[in-house]
Image 1 (cartoon, helix red, strand yellow):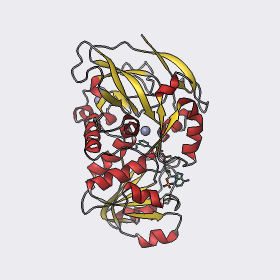
Image 2 (tube, rainbow, N blue to C red):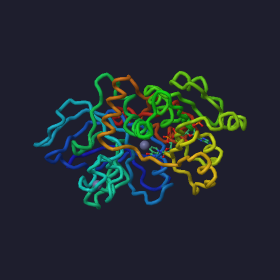
Image 3 (tube, rainbow, N blue to C red):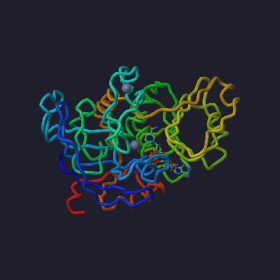
Image 4 (cartoon, protein in one colour):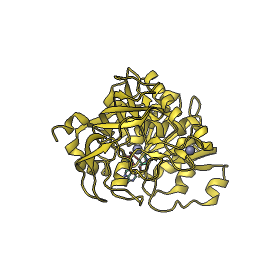
Length: 350
Ligand code: NAP
Ligand code: ZN
Ligand code: ZN
């Protein structure tokens, strides 16, 4: 076994502390990755705090993992030692179900193996994530990071990037399409950059006016504060696509009214309460309400290549790993511009 060092929560809501554990030795098709950076996703916080239920402890979070290949298995074909690679939200799936065959591993019928707070396909070995120095992953679930992208700012592409790219591509954001992004956080700011690069007209709907200047710099064409009731009057029937990255309870019917005929609103965040939607909000305008979950492995590579071509990375604040608990508090307070990324070199001194 490989000795690994990371940061873990030992129980729900407990602070993260240094934690030693073991990874598997590389199998035939595995690569061993020396982790250089790992992004901090709001989902890490939900899971450490067991807000979705069923969390597995000890938990080493982290699914925006980037690093360098340090060892390869005997049959590894895609990667060699020294390659810059990433790992997102999944490290395995059954590979045989209809979803896996379509490249939609995130919807694997038996359940994909999520990178942490999940189980390997043996359904008993807990997975451990990227807040650590090393990880062993099957090469088919490893992504290549384009050479022109800095590794630290590329890390958030592995979750925030693909989570926005996938619905933007699926609902065909592009020239002539009006796209609104609700919430300018880790996910939302990637959505603005990617939708802008796809050629769509992008509007940010933020809960205050604080991020207006930033949103324009990131590529948004328009910015509105949702705390202003006028916003909802002014923007009635405006958008082809609204992507909701906020996990707070919002007035769903008010947002649905902002869609054009045949417009779609896509949920990414998971609100605590059930989503109350009036039938007339959908019927009047043939509107749709949908959801989206990360993206498949092939699509994640497509997203990385798109970001490489357009030089898109995340706006990050690089932190030492012993600042992770403070970082969590700041994410919850919306006090990050726009993603924390952990510098894993700081594990040695933590
Ligand atoms: P984040 O960085 O914390 O961003 C969330 C944004 O929500 C904030 O920046 C803020 O934007 C807005 N917000 C915060 N508090 C609010 C409030 N009280 N009222 C209204 N808006 C508020 O989080 P994230 O990492 O982007 O993740 C967002 C959500 O998506 C999380 O729930 C996460 O678990 C989920 N997620 C889903 C997927 C998926 O595949 N579906 C993947 C990853 C994450 P403004 O200041 O602009 O309003
Ligand atoms: Zn995430
Ligand atoms: Zn499957």
